[in-house]
Length: 96
Image (cartoon, rainbow, N blue to C red; front, side, top):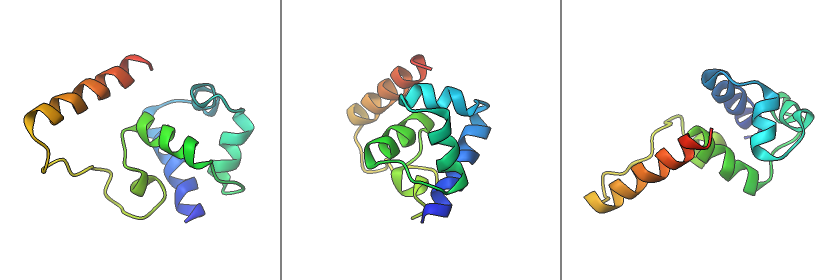
């Protein structure tokens, strides 16, 4: 699982076009921590994994390699709940 997490963090960071230092600053960690995660030398804490998943708009399951789908199933949500999710995503996007 650690290798998948390492690959996913690097892949998502590259896809977003940000440097390790930018991700580190967002997470309030050092660039060397991000580098160690991407190399599979260490694994972020659960709190950090959650923040990383939110930052990249992926599920925690995807981030840790439990699924290959980046999408989160929202088919069971009503329109009010979907609107709340859209507002949350817009909020997170505005912070970056």
